[in-house]
Image (tube, rainbow, N blue to C red; front, top):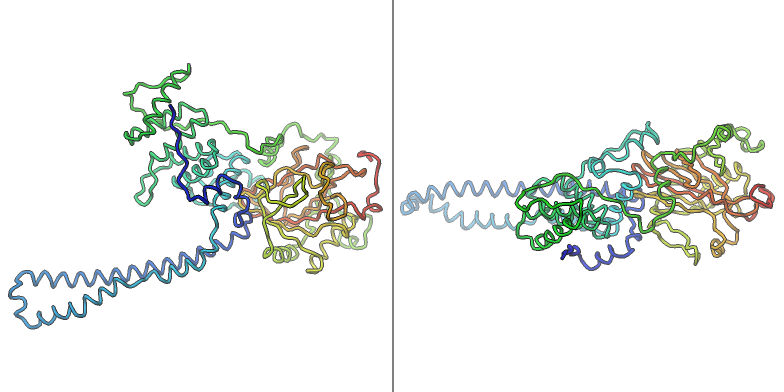
Length: 556
């Protein structure tokens, strides 16, 4: 009978967190700009720790000096204990040591040099990331691993997505990271184990085994890794790897009760299979080959997941190749929107990047000073981004949208008013009924899975409180370059927009007859390396009746 590995012993609060959905309420990992202070805070803590270590070393040096001096005198006295005190100086120094030196040493030993360090640590401890952030950060790495088809070896080496970075913006360079230790890999596997994600648990336990080196400062042992690996392999129906891991575990720890029982179970299971034969019991094998594991479908699996991930990886599926007859319509030009007064002297650089649905990029539509003002206004007000419940119409958090957002109104700053006016100038649509400017910063592995900007027919409560109708169009501003990942992709048509600082992407969500364009379903790919800032204007139907005239059918 197979004996399962028990769940890790954790505090009740943390256990409930891991088993529930509380992780979507985390506040630090959901926006990289809010994590920057952690870097500076850790620098201050390291400096405080350096001071503490120096004080402890100074203290220890004083104790060693005292010990050396007293030991020398004591050894001299023990050579002739009965005659040593005959000399009055020796008698005096002995009394002095007991009345002065030893009490001073006692005070020195009792001196609390850690007080300042502990004070500095306690002062900032409330700003530490929470357990939710830890779980969210681990899930973010796993999300990046899946979306960009990354191996645990490359992630552990810090070689995440260099090819994707080169495909995005090679001139940006590449951010480096240190390699993960065996213990780091083990912790990622353990987080997956707690989440009952045995596929990733097995992968990261394999990586932990490959990197394992005995470390006297760590409690991690090889048999602990093998214990997790055997269970995860069994859950992945890889009986052979579970058998090998258990055999290696018993070689290290022959008294491991659970492994002894499981070994018998695995031997019987392997005998049942025609393809798997257990090695002779006296054969001492320690397999170093990694097992093969099949990725499970996500609990929230989406039909277009495969295409979505390919597009995020900068691969164009063959089914979406654009024919020459379609490509000839994709052109760049200077745009004045029928000689609009504000665009005559400063025309916009307009590029049509897709034809069905039509999508345009306004290059350099925002300036660096404007983007800085927008970020500075938004950052103190960033809160976890929400989605609208399609049934209730209420706003709520969701694990498939990892970012923070803030809303800026025109009256707050002249730059916001200027941006709103510019959107109206280039689109010809009124901003009177548009939503406020939403500013978004994506966190670790920040993403927004495939969704529609407009409300579908069954979502009767969406935007009801606004009283401005459906979202007729979207203007999406990219306010940062991204080293790797973070593209906006349209899985229905194979379109892919790479973030370009200062550019604005525009498309219509509704046909002229008011029906939603299902081809505009889009997603924000996870940010692999870098920080992604965007802002957007969602433009509504009301007030556009004479600006974008209605039609009877989608073809109008």
